[in-house]
Length: 154
Image (cartoon, rainbow, N blue to C red; front, side):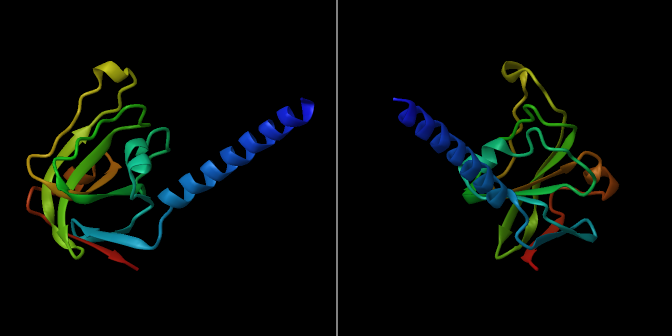
């Protein structure tokens, strides 16, 4: 009986380590950058699957160097919210084809910590990518719907 309990504890511990490594792998920069608003910025986190898209920047420190790119399998009206996000963000929905495209919508969003009262932000047009960054980026770079965007592998 004791051996089974010990094995179970070790198994759970190993699974937790593997889950942490997979999360880090799934959200770590893979050498992508975005050109937007007259500048080029490294993507610091990628969300390429449902799990990483749902988590987003929850609980992450957000700085002026934070650029998280959400990749979706097809264009859609993908909703976003700011539940348990550490700071205000700008959310920009993008329509890209082969890395080239434009902004289709943008929102300034504040964090919320009461799940039942969090506003949900929807784009006005279908998007296949979304980028989140520290609040103030949209204003500082005079971004509007239709502004050009390029995402590329370094």
